[in-house]
Length: 455
Ligand code: ARG
Image (cartoon, rainbow, N blue to C red; front, side):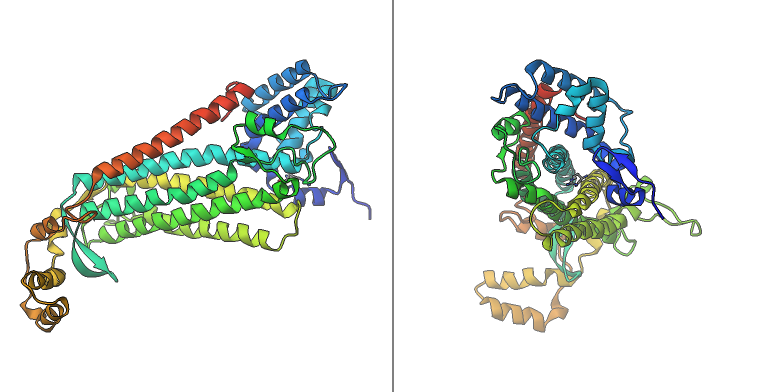
């Protein structure tokens, strides 16, 4: 039986094969339209400057292409048909419909392989900077919460068992610091992503005098990926590095969520979650559940899965482009949006968090002061291990002490009475400035190529 084939830009294809290979690209690629237009604008600009005679496209033609690309990038109704396969061929179709033969020239010296890679990198750069801004906001909310309740005593726990005197300030800024330190991993992903694959074409270059530095500069990348084969293999690696950094960030956020779930249980009662951020039960009228925080845990598992999935997809793939790479697109997009919404909802949660001082103080059972009691003996000249055994052998002698005094007694750096809030303010300010200056520079590059066309 003969199957009716469908005409696509790249030839006749069986409709089932087309559907299977195109997958979700017509939907996912809508997020790449503006970035595809920018990549094409840079490529066409470079083509118009290429020292060949006759020119592939003239400067005036490049100008007309850029004008149409700017319209496409701003067109909210732009659609990608299954017969287009993806954003790249959809944009080319539109350019050919509106510009005729000129539209047919824009793909000269380029492959969809370097094209999609550049789109993804521009998209990731934009999203990662927004994400880092949201990281700063969550960390700032935690620092503000810590500062507002800085010396309020909170039982420090190990193995979940009461351990030593601590404070709300130490708890909150401890989580803030973990989150801020994760920026280093995001920055590693950012640096790997900030390299331009354009001009590698299908992964083997082309016999044309492409100026790869020029397209890299036009798009604001740190530099081009040099080796054309390597550039084609960097697709997927880039997404996997990003997802690994995102997974690590989620693992940190998940522990914050878990602490808030625990400390807001009636049995602890240390924190009160804002009621409007909790959800009820259809049967139990008294319920206010921390569903948001539970979903942070489950989404952490999801992002971990996405990162593992990306690496699994890559590890056995031969060098050069393989269609498998298309399947890294949905996961990196999902990973970014999941972490971004999680950062925002957690910041909202922390801003609404209240404490119950009475419950916090009630947690200070005598055992919490055991280490401090042994250290008092040390201060009187007893060797540490002897003091330790003395306290351990007479636990019944321990009594309730003043938790505020215990909190005030730990004055060294980073402890209950030694937190440097100025340090956090400086780190937050540094992060904000670094994000903002990169966003400004990136926007300026985009606007120079295609005015007002970035999402
Ligand atoms: N949609 C494709 C992807 O995301 C574009 C590249 C297609 N290249 C190819 N050689 N079939 O990977």
